[in-house]
Length: 317
Image (cartoon, rainbow, N blue to C red):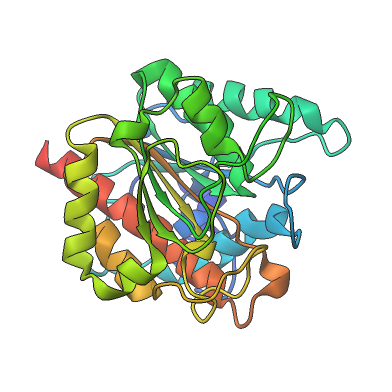
């Protein structure tokens, strides 16, 4: 007797709402089994992969990050989502748009490709949740969002400041903040970096919570400091998975010891729902260096929390 379950929900779903019923260990691996589609009409949230890793300074492999995060998210597809105690997709229409088509040999074309497609995805008001890729992808994403919403406050979870020098031509995962400040895309006086455990030549006046400070703070204190800094300004949330300690996230290109646990950072994100977050990303997952999908699981859970606070905000509205 044939199963009544709707297998391969990512391609058989007839709606952007509702639960999937696939086995967690099989089927088409879209993000949380959302419908794979290029038709995002009516979507509240669009999930999009950007498999770029041509700008890394240490270990490459983040181009496989979107695939790994989607695979790790499969376990989330059926149950009310912790800690929100909600079926996120009852009232939240979410589409997985697939990946950005990048040029592997004409890499200088990629920033414009990412920015142009991102602008198209958010044109009708959809919230864009992007899966990297290395951290350079946040630069064209910020440009697209700022074009629509104006200058943004940046909330950056990271081990690195990414404020290295840029001559306007370098494609590097270490300079997207420099570019964003220089071009007025972000307001440094309202921006904040959390988990920094390295030094860079510039801070541009951006507030920093260093790794050792973070260790002594509660998640409530961290969230309060973020909210005080950002205020009511439209903001963009970016999470470099190397913000986490290597014990939580070994599968990344530039790991730094001494970071926070995934539990603590998830608790911080959970408390940011009152902010006017216009878009977000999770970047720098490099599955070749992962163990037992630890990093991919952490990244997919961070993305889930980003969806969760978005769902709660829409319900509140």
